[in-house]
Length: 367
Image 1: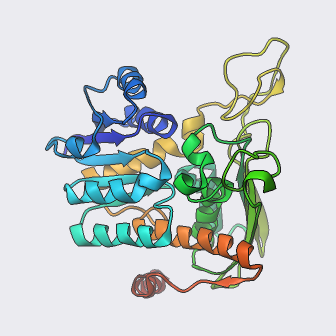
Image 2: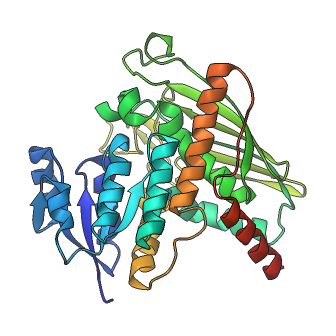
């Protein structure tokens, strides 16, 4: 396959960074886009020079010249659109979360297995250059056995009305932001989460800042893994100054600290301000750390190129980026909510015990 032909569902924030990453991928060609917001769709296809547009994704899915669908729609639509695309014979890239409930996520996994098509779970952290380098150091024994991970994604709140609505988002800051560090911790530690203790704000008037949000504006969880390692995971909407993605990894022989979003080599002081510093930054006045190729450093460019190659070269999605992985992470997120509501530790049952057993055999064979 010379080019992988793409259809995008969505026309706002996520759709734009997917389109920009696809434009940097030589083997990708965006054929069409779809959105129910006609004005937004018109701006989107003009900006990215997309030849065809639709307001009904089912009509777009009928096109025989589309190989892969990128789902960049609000969270509550992920299950419905994923299954529709798979049923139409299209491979899928689905933004996080895989769905807004665990049963819906498992329904997507079932559809992937039934159709034999690929679904790539769009978790950009595992494609970020700094994180890939940290993984290489860990694999070389640089910090010994990973014992504890502390990771967070935070900023000052989402502009999307769907993210601010608990029902359409699936929760608040924890599912919308902490899902990234949660997935990362599971990936870097290399085994399943077995226990979760969570704490979240109550939403609306129980929030710290965002009283108009239905979901929480702060949440955190302590996760215990089957090998005994632990992770502290946080997501919040109360952080000013821009997107703050940071990681600390503690091992038996050393430690690693990663600043994904504020690790720019640039330091700027401006009395007048300028166009853009980092995602969600409120101002560019005074001292700032402007991002340099933010999409690449956050992992989007590499992630999207890898997904295109999964279709072009008929490869399976990497570990951590499958439909099953998306379901496992959602299970842990929902366990944190359950723990917060009940005030107790929640134990997790394996979702895919057969796959887990096979993975163990593969790891032993490699050793």
